[in-house]
Length: 169
Image (cartoon, rainbow, N blue to C red):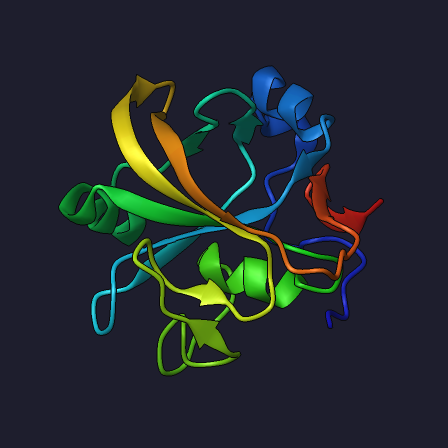
């Protein structure tokens, strides 16, 4: 909850790059990428990603090469991707580093340990094996093969990021 209608610390639109402003006008599904295990788990909110159908299925996404997540992916060669749902705004903000995480990123909520990284209990997720990564703009373009998919019976509305705000469809 905020007392401000807008982010008081946000860079004004006229000072942002036109590319960033264009990207902000494209609604993007919000996902949580995690890697590592007990004591070494890391995670990051990612909205620049695609799931590609095929045999095998693939995932591509943009991550920060200086993030703890990338360090964990490099060390393990695998990661989990979890689509977030309506109401997961604080979870997304916490893993984006925009909200405090007393006790660590995984201290609140219920998490299931997987071979690819911790995943929020009851959420759909994909376990991915790293294929490659390369510099792409100011990020790393990560390409991976989907090795496992878990889809619980419940389906929630997706969390979407559009023009600097979370919404759902």
